[in-house]
Image (cartoon, rainbow, N blue to C red; front, side, top):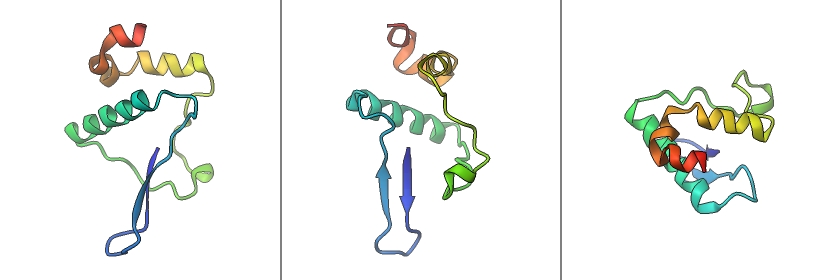
Amino acid sequence: MVRVLGGGGDPVTRRENRAGEPAANPYRYMASQIVAGLDGVDRALDPGPSADRPYQSDAPAVPHSLIEALAALRGNACFQQHPGNFFIDY
C-alpha cells in the first residue's frame, strides 16, 4: 500500500510505501506495485476516496488466505499480461 501523508502546499508532505508482507521478495513486491500503478494510469482509474480510517471504510477487503490471494492473482487481467501467466503459474 502506498499512502500520502500531508497535502498540497504542505512542506512536510510525504509518500510511504507500506509493504504488506515482510517475507515477500522486495523486488517482486515493488515490481507488482509499479505494474499495477502503470495499469491504473493507462486506464485512468479513480483510486477512490482516501482511507484515513481503514477499519471504518467501505473499501473491499483484501484476501484473507493464500488460496484467496492466488485466486485473485490468477483472475487479474493486468498481472496475466505483466509479468504473464508463465510467472503466475510458476
